[in-house]
Image (cartoon, rainbow, N blue to C red; front, side, top):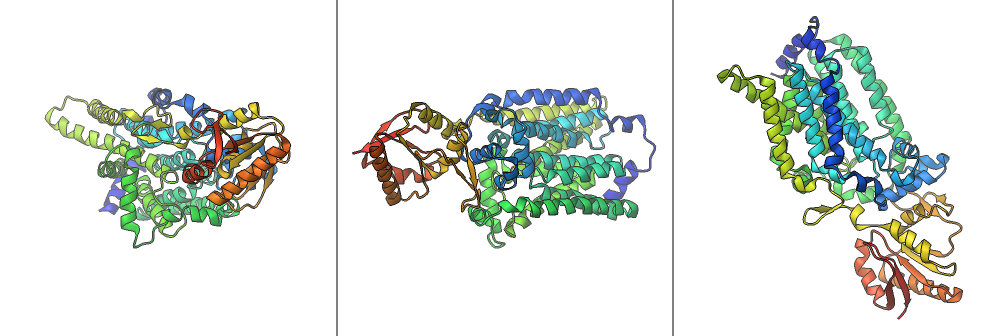
Length: 538
């Protein structure tokens, strides 16, 4: 059955003179620019861009931001588990308080790529292509998972590059040429610098093209695809193992251990993870899964079987890598690209189902135009989806009863700035380990030095040679915290100063701190979600 479909699609798409209808689908029309412009204009309506750009950096963002202050020669070490290209892009942002403009840009690219994926199918009319593009891009715009990925990490790039590769696969199928194949290979080879997920998505995309050309017995094209795939994958593998794999240390593997199920644990693990991800998908898993399947069928139906196969290979590849303990499986952050890609494909599935329904309606009422019926059905279904998830939109990091992110419950910036303003030269500043990177970043007047290797997930540490007044607590056990505070108080007594306590991202340490601070006199010096404390002997 699959082979027959492939052969049939080829006959309709290859070796036929281009008509006006087919030519119109090969290049953007004014409606495309208008559609993409409207979608991008809706981004600040749906997303709280002001909070996204101005909130302080939390733990996992702080060390990424701090790498910008280090010399360029130290970037290969400082980038750690972050793709090197992503870390380099951050250096191009003039104001380090607005580094989140980089994930914002990739947010926009996901919308454009999703539009392209729906638009590039072999629809009977260009307007159906516009409708399908709008459906896929609107689904990406509205999916709740996009609301919580405003942080300074590469997860938006993962989604954007994955969608872009699948869209380029459809573009390559649309009008075959070595130039288009070369563009796909170049984007794949370049993408690994900005997203580790490229090493997962690219083999799936090339695998789809290889399988389709082989089934069609197009041996010359098969050779071209094989050469392009070999070239791109050589660069990807060399870059990943030569540069990116440095961030995969023992502590990092230990951190992700729970996201690597064994084969026997896989069914239960998948069930739990799918259930836990349901809120950020915005609809029941069975419904989204059905729409994704409809999207894949629509791609094959409308002449893009290689892209459809790539999408089928993607979850297979991710599952295999999870069981093999190479890549965390269905984890909220690292699988963000799957959630966004799934949203785009589900959106295309909505368009495909709506078009199929329109064809059935036209049998009864032939005068009704299929594009208008399809557009109306898509608009209704996507509006219902948006209304269902209305509480998510313009999410500022904390929606009571819905969800919260670290951006809303941590604020090392305010704590650092408050102490810098109110401390005296003789004071001692004590902080937990997780506050250190943020403190160093928000102390731009003080020089920093990279210390590597270091036994944490980041793999490096920071030394501030001019800040002898700072004590970082590397052990969060009760006895160790007691001893460290006593030492800080003794030093402050000798210097005639006070002891400031800064804590950030200390949720796991809350019980230990409650026990320790009960033995001291504690004064809250500042407000906010992470207040600064003044400590003295009880």
